Image: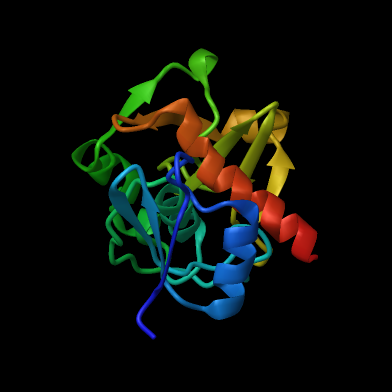
Length: 185
């Protein structure tokens, strides 16, 4: 089997909570037909509860997979561990070229990307702002999780970015996965 194909007649072009639970169980790509368009979703692990492995399941992978579930494809950049200590700037060198632009922190919306400096003067950590004072992120030696955007993270925040193709309803794809994962626990 190559993929599971189904439709959401008149519905939204993102996988539902039930779709995500079943997709992760099936370990297959799912293609969703909605309003005459086929939306292809590769099978990615749930966004919360992932083990950290730099370059495989790290904060950039989480950001990339979350955007994939929201219908926006981001490239996978090769990155060596500690790239920020070797003169590289993965995020600032690539975000604009991939369709993101910087916005004021005061205008944060669910789905925006927070860049943080985690033990570095170079932004080396990405998190997804979930709204209501929460972020979704993945730091070394911890499972990926939702967490309050507390003073600790606000002090580490370098900048806030939004994708040019982003629209508020796209967060539905991310939210549905977060809900599906919380039910699976």
